[in-house]
Image 1: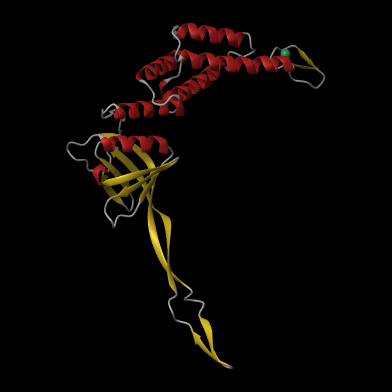
Image 2 (image 1 turned 90 degrees about the vertical axis):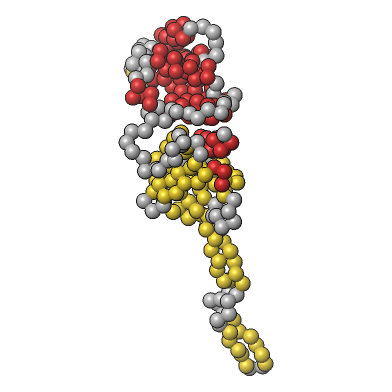
Length: 276
Ligand SMILES: [Zn+2]
């Protein structure tokens, strides 16, 4: 006879849990996540909300050991929820920060948490939309960019992949050669003609390096390529889930692509900074 991993009572032959206990446990997790999510916008204090959450845990077989993790997952859900209605507001940012503190995230854990990362990025976008130049990015060490005096760094992406769209022209039909029948029994073979030109476009990975975003330029610095693009030279941006395309006004300019992990952030950042 095994014992139920939730309530600790005998669960029956070859069984490790009661169905009802498991259902109560899952329901408890759902309720905790719901309570933390609504804590984002309701008027009660964060401590009251956490008190309720503790009660739910006690009544749902959620152990003290796993409780912090359950609550932290709930907070991550609340961050996602804050983005559902569009821009992250200042109130949402402050409330989520206070919640993170009350929940007991330590600094290191918070800084490496993807939801916290998203929270900071959301705040950066909001500030740019409000016409401010965000100063939330802290650089440790020297950057390989030569900024102008008036320029302010907003963000740096590491390991950005830089691609260029290149046009290849090839002559189709040349290599095959072909034969013309001139008269019965006589063939002229023509081999060296050029055929018709066909242009194909390919995205070519040129380099990987640092992508710096300032209030006036996009900077790239890799092992082979280093350059900056001024926003007022850019005609349009193309959004991708994992990056952006940049189209400049010069006829000779090739479309350029920067791939990072978070296209949403980069696109919103540069399109709005370009408008400032
Ligand atoms: Zn049980």
